[in-house]
Length: 558
Image 1 (tube, rainbow, N blue to C red):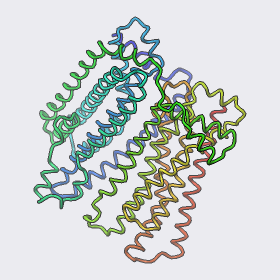
Image 2 (image 1 turned 180 degrees about the vertical axis):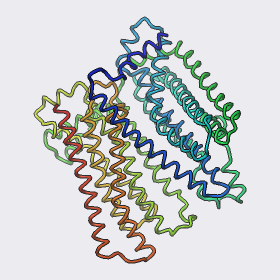
Image 3 (image 1 turned 180 degrees about the horizontal axis):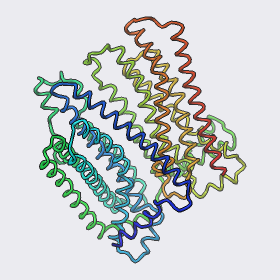
Image 4 (image 1 turned 60 degrees about the horizontal axis):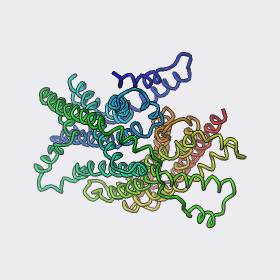
């Protein structure tokens, strides 16, 4: 009961207050944008599943394999999110000192914070998964049991992931010296990323595109029917939903019961461990962290190579030192490097020579689609680094306001400091993949141009909306991406990427058809349309950058 009472402030804070019309408008806007996104995911999944069903004999097997991949990926993402959220809720929140002073047992306090972390770490994955699973129900004409098990199994998967993450966090904080707590964040982040990659690669999805790697069609079909690792909770969830799709009610209920029995067992174990170790681990986490980089001459060397104005130099040194003193930030550079390596490797592993499509056309088409994937990677990184950059100033923001510098110039200096590394990263993703795909010089130039236009627009959206929805009292600025402003940034950035590719798609298709298949060479009209499209892209990206930065400046000055 004490644990539920500790959750009351969170429940009451989530309710709209009387007279707060602005909160209602935000809630309604987010509901509309979220509904559009969910409906889009649902319709796309329906189209993919219908395309699978056109393949005789193996259509349903491919759909089941996609369902398995969805569950494995969702479980891995839940683990990663639960580790970071659990560490923040149980050990790093600013209100923990006040809560621990209350006459409440540490076990009840742990239960309340753990339930809160389950919701915070899981809601985004659930929102993405439900429209996809609903599409399965429509295509397979599933009964009500499937939709019921969908809710039950997703909830069980969230509980299992959060319980495993909390046990790992408590053990890690108790064993690792408290002064190296932020180093634990780096270790857990790398471990979660490696676990996600290994779990995804164990399913070997590229084998589905290359039946010739199997000795016969029967072996290929048998591989599609093959079950995932039986010990993974995602497998139990997959088997439960597959049974419900095939109207095998008893089998689906049994698999769901297995998942929830494991979830309840882990929940009980975590409470027992928390009863003996949580408060001791929390006490160890109170000592100050030791920065890895106490004094680094890199900033001084950079200043000598590239002289900068006094104001920019001061802010540059401040941002550089704050970044490398926080292990939770610089450790993510390792994850970014791993992401780039895996990203490029996946393009190298594509079996292009096995597909019944002209290689030249397919290579250039994949290079064109790669621009969207690279832009989405930049969007995710902007949500981690650019969007919370203003909120990270915290209560010291008054120093910026009292300094002899305008808010506009301060925002543009922040933009200038992150633009170069983000632009170089975008170029690496598109140029390296184009080289792996052996795309033409024309596509290489278009890719470089598009990333050069999209990168500042995405960063401008991140910084501008991060300034407009800045929260200087937030305990962890990186969590601001899950707020209303963060969701608006993600949706607008994805919409911008889709709009840019839609504008470029027509001229690109026309050029590829004329060059690869030698059908109707491009005339002056087609080249004019191509020039108009890239000019429109440049204008849209420039307008987005300027409008977002201006909007952020206006909100900060209010």
